[in-house]
Image 1: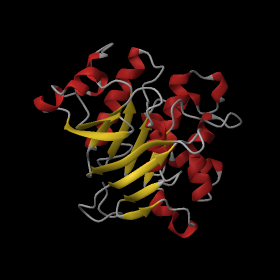
Image 2 (image 1 turned 30 degrees about the vertical axis):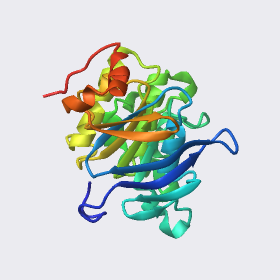
Image 3 (image 1 turned 90 degrees about the vertical axis):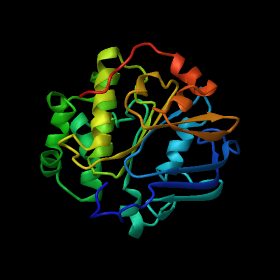
Length: 267
């Protein structure tokens, strides 16, 4: 986390007795009485089954929907923040949607640079130049002028990641980023996100706090620092994923068991 933009030691996420409503089912509460703390530099993976509220949780953390009850603070700021004057505080959180959710009428390059053009009023050429290192790091440069409909899910997903990173957030939220990816692209994501958390990616040299949702913990066991599970309509923080007592918990073992492939932390 950059000390220039946030006070040192400020808690990144703080949820107190929070209820979260479904984005797609009006009047339905998917999570309730959530108490959760995320500290700077932590890498959390939140596991849950289908329709357990993973996407709704991230939408709330990104400030796109308001909690139904309770208190949420992002880097010390009360959320959600809808006022234009406080927009910079909300932009400290970047969200990667499942599948990228790109705008089909824009090229991949235009999708990636959209936040720069919208929030900083940059022209296309200037925005693309500013994002060039990021595009290169994500191997997107050859596809800059391609339309999303002409690209596979794996590249649209990376473009969604680039769009979230282009504003240099301090918290990165990722909704099931490995969904639909083959083993090569899955390995790339594991290694790249590990580097983001540790601050070893040249395109984002400051250590980044990450929250990832997933339907299995297996691919994340070597890189995530903490895990939580969604069950009985609430979030249960389990603790450090590398601690034997956490990995031996019955619910954690269940999510670790769905292992299609394994990954080791890069040296």
